[in-house]
Image (cartoon, rainbow, N blue to C red; front, side, top):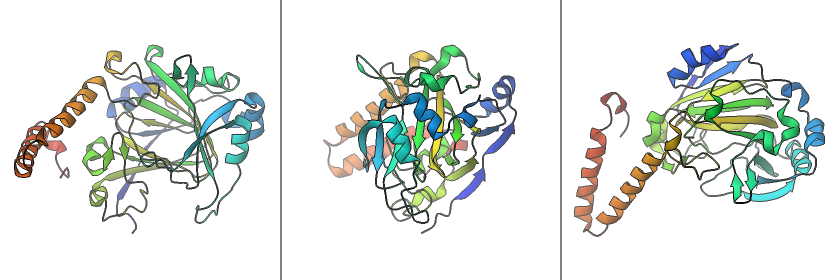
Length: 321
């Protein structure tokens, strides 16, 4: 069944400067598609031959799936370690039925560093130093707030699970087209969340019997071309579909006080410390209620809900049922 969601276009801005971004775009807390911003020579230089020549046979860990709809909740993919040049060869080869996108293997790289302790924060300057000088990251944030710069490669047709991030970020599209679908934080109760991820895997053809409230969401959408940048504010749900073989770089920065973030979080996707503690307290409260008979448990669960609902501003309650 086709989704009945209404779709709004993401606002588009041309030739944005740092001052314009900070004064007019960032304060709105809404996604923005930025065009004609200088991102260096990467869009012309980063051919498959060029990046393979610069990176070579360095091993990278990638997601490999038989389905283009990658599902992080149910893990319908395997992690495989392969040489970078082999990844590019496979990911840039059309290995599926273009109409149905149902056969073949699909690849997705989300770069991450490694130090003596294990996983480390992604930084294109460290993991891909021979490519880093080709891309110019807009200086829309303070250097001291920088968290990570993530190098990404995806096969044509790969669609990533809908999720939210806890930091503001810029997604810089270098090669290929990408469709971005986004949903407001206000729609959290309609997203069927497990952690930071939505259970609604196919957002274009959702199971309306399993996920009826998903149809209440307001969807925002844009098509990114090479050279485009999208600003994704923290807590906005987003879903990325690679229309073509895709190369992109994500830049995340800390838009809250630094002490609110978990220091032992190389991915930067753990909820802020106060929020994480509050969620753990809710889970513990639910476990405590399990001791009671069902009718008592039901009654006090409803009381907990009324306490939480009372804290939601009136203008945020519409549609949150």
